[in-house]
Amino acid sequence: MQNKTQAKRKHQLSIKSRLLWAAALWLSVMLVAAGYLIPNLVKHYLVQDAQDQMSLAMDEITANLGANDNGQLTLPVRLSDPRYSQPYSGLYWTIHMGHDTLRSRSLWDQTLTTEKDGLKTVTKGARNEPLITLNRSIYLPEFRHAINITVGMDQAPLQSTLQQVMGQLWIILGLLFIGILVLISIQVSWSLLPLRRMQRELAALRKGEQSELNDTYPQEISPLVDDLNALLFHYQELLDRARNHAGNLSHALKTPLSVLKNEVDRLDDDQYQRLSAPVAQIQGQIDYHLGRARMAGSTNILSVKTAPSERIDAISMAFDKVYAEREITLVNELESELQVAVEESDLDEMVGNLLENGYKWSQSLIRVYSEDTEQSGWVNICIEDDGPGIETEAMEKAMQRGVRLDETTPGTGLGLNIVSEMAHSYRGKLTLEKAKLGGLKATLRLKLAGIK
Figure 1 (cartoon, helix red, strand yellow):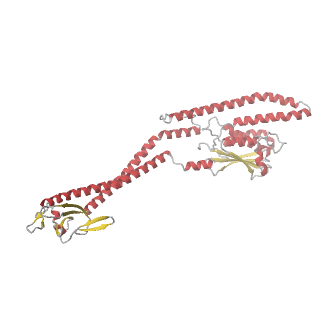
Figure 2 (cartoon, helix red, strand yellow):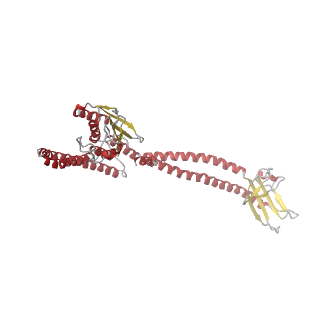
Figure 3 (spheres, one colour):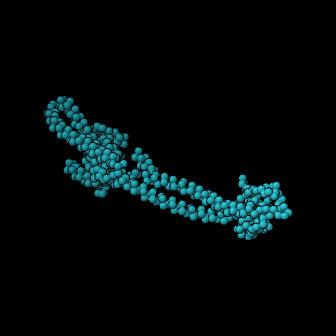
């Protein structure tokens, strides 16, 4: 489940990434649209300007067009624009009425032709170049038929101008895209600064450097910070209260239970056999539930950290005195820098139970070392001995509540069960297997300190 959660987080986009991707998509759509709409608008204006120029020539032709003495069309004056008189200049005009045709000197020995280009009709000039054209039909009193006037201009200069505009436009749009995206990135980074400060404070909470969020946050985040601080305070208060109650209960029951045990020891064998088991059961229930109370969690849910190497050295010194006659050697191979996200008293409870089993059952050697896990941020603390070990099929049963595999050895049968449940409360796990030394290998998987 933990692996799935972390894998899911890796595939989730951050808020900054989401905003930047959305901005980049929006900018791309808008700038691409601008890149296609602006050239069309520029082309429209250029064509309109060309037609305005040709309209002046059209008006000049219309004003000077007439009939000669033979009743034929004639244009007695040259147009004011000299390009209409320059051969192949790209500016042309023609006049048609029935079989009569007049044309500009710029056409020289050619005529305007029309061709079909798909659904459009294209008029071409003296050099077979596509033209922008303007057509007009007029009537003169001297003639019965309509006079059709066509003025044309070469499209090439317009297309060249349009290509230059488009090239420069895409460069401008590209720079605009980069500039706006950089500004948006700066704006998003500045807007998310409070969240980054909160992230740093949460990291400090996990490391135990502070017990609440102290920074000043914007109004949108302040209620969340206040609620989180209240939750942390409430959790710590409840936990301290529960542990105090558990400690008070332990002290309150210790003296009466000791008196009861002493009185039972003085009874005859029959009465002793009948009463010793219930008294032992009461003691076991008290030990079990006190153990559950101790593993309710850490006093600071985000900032706990303990060095297992130091705790094992301290616990082994006590056990060396208790089991001095057994001459057990404990080899602690854990690195002193290693820290796990477990409260010290809880780690003592877990490791102490496992080491006590090692001292009880090993022949001469207990080895404590760490193993890397497949999942980053976790460590396996291994405790193995050279004792008789446990049969494979009995390992799962050994971690059940109240189960004792050897009734001749003192104990309540709660140690491994408490260790397993305490490890689970820290999202870890206890596993048992055959040790290379020949005895039992207990592996305690715990989260490294400072890891989310």
